Length: 215
Image (cartoon, rainbow, N blue to C red):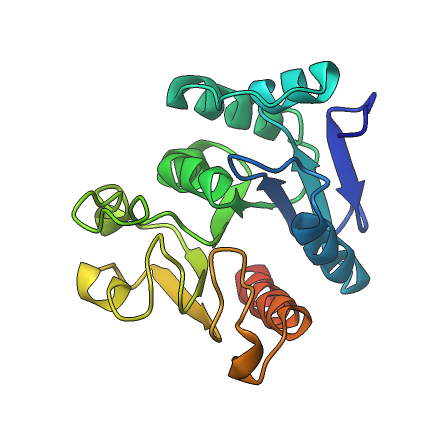
């Protein structure tokens, strides 16, 4: 993992009407190929994109060794602090990959009442641990009032296209299914689609979501 002096990676125009603030997942940093492709594509569409890392990933970057994710209160505090540092941005859509999106979704309604946050996006939401479909992480989603876009692979082991529709999710949560995608949107070769096409699908959904929020 490369060392970095800045706690953020910023792409696209800072004066965009909406900036996507994206956190990483549990195992890969903010400059992972997955997030890099999305950030580049959104910036090309003139959206601002800011990526950041939680404390444990910053420690892993400095030490060169893997680190265990911080406890949820630490993750939430880091997210809140990052939002505070971006108060000069017009509006924020907060989210991220897997765990990063989960943290954002838990804060979304509260932040939408008191900050420049107007929506959220989850890139592969961990609805439940793999192989444990009874251990749902949906309680806060069921009462969600703020707009949330969830981009989910149809074959995601954290919540697939067969199971998730039965969870009773609210109208404020928009589900966009990524064709034959796994937790990182990668399809099987036999599916007739590609990872590149699925990432483009995700970008188009995020672009359309931002345009709706921008009015």
